[in-house]
Image (cartoon, rainbow, N blue to C red):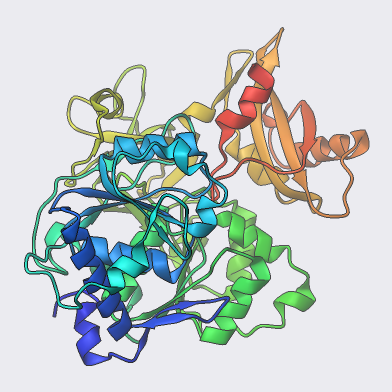
Length: 510
């Protein structure tokens, strides 16, 4: 059976393929087949051929997903553009990926300068009219509903998160093939089947923005399996619990900041919702503090799985809840690629329990689009590649993340990785979010500073700063604890929960 939604348009045409959690709007598999076929016809009429690129900038919506499935059945590279970007930042991605068409939602366009995008390709709007752009749905619905003659499986081309600079496209070779088979389309559904016993009987919750890699790939995997996917328009802690209850969610994927927000709900709110339908909750994207994950397992039971990888897909580790309870803090053992810990200075592989840069020897090649120097900078001569993270493996082969290499603080000649400090501080009841960075210090070169976003009803003052430093010293070594604490209204995070520390550091290093 082809792992593609067109299969279920015949077998279960009236089954909901996509439901929007907030509004309840939905597309059945038959409706998804109709709009994606018409969309494919429109894209072909514009001259887009196999291997061409389309860029889409839209919030989580039925329209966004309809365009994505039209592109993927037209043999196109589909590039999502994050909705929080400025016109200049979006224009960079649209131009860099060589888009032959661009689609933006009316809601996003209202916050952008369309002229600032300087489009050199046809531009369309979805979800409303936008001056200067053609309406995608209008032109699509005028097209025939038949499948295009040269149907071919397309491929997502994601961009790196850009936490340390401009994002780079992650390019993979285009390998044309029939729907559900070409371009390794069957890989992610197969993983869901094997690891989580996912099937058409599943109901999958997508709480994160779909312009990021994992949320998009995993949603597509469950749609390819014939499951119903429930998509949150945006994440809110109580709304997520309500969605699990209302739609009897069986499978889901999260990031640690979502766990933290749900855990900090009042007990009376958390107890309002039944969560017993949930069979699998997977998390990734950022390190999860050990106490946070332990509390989630205590609450939801041993159904919380974790993996470590990147949009580059050069390797992957995985850990079950039972393995994690025996190895707290680990992100698992490799299931894709061979794992190697390397000392940057000597270039030698390190033994167990010694931290170094994490590399994978991978069977899946990737390259950064139009950036051979970037690709070379993360690849050793033997072909091993890294995402820039630091960690170690224990004697049993379980990987533990230390931090990103770029986040390291050097204070008085001592290397300090801030993740451990952040994990300690986030457990204080006053702390909603925290970033630990190095700031200029005349004596030590850098000193450790905590930048804290407080929970409502807490006041950031000198007394609380002293309390937070003392709280940290009770848990970890003094040299890793902040020397100072600043309070801010909100920390710069991506929608997948990654701290964008370059923006934070710029305030102190300018």
